[in-house]
Image 1: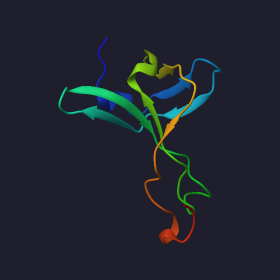
Image 2: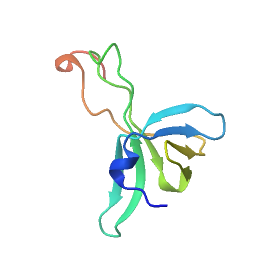
Image 3: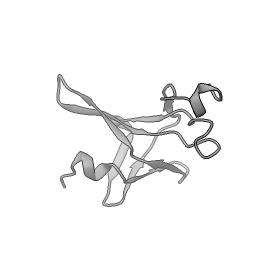
Image 4: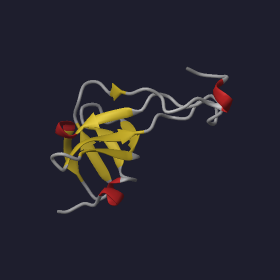
Length: 96
């Protein structure tokens, strides 16, 4: 099965260990030197309708992906690898 990056963008990510829905794929990290996908990125949830910014992004390493299906991606891992927030809500007055 082949899958383009644009097709992965809206697939739902589910943790196999406990069945929780983590979110939808928003971005992909690629190693340009080796031309490999390193991880998928799920943007953090909005806080207070986006006025207070977002929660931290969730990065899932490629090794933690078990199955890529038509609509979902099944992953198995213990902890999220979170990154810094992309921005602050409402002019930077609120949030971290």
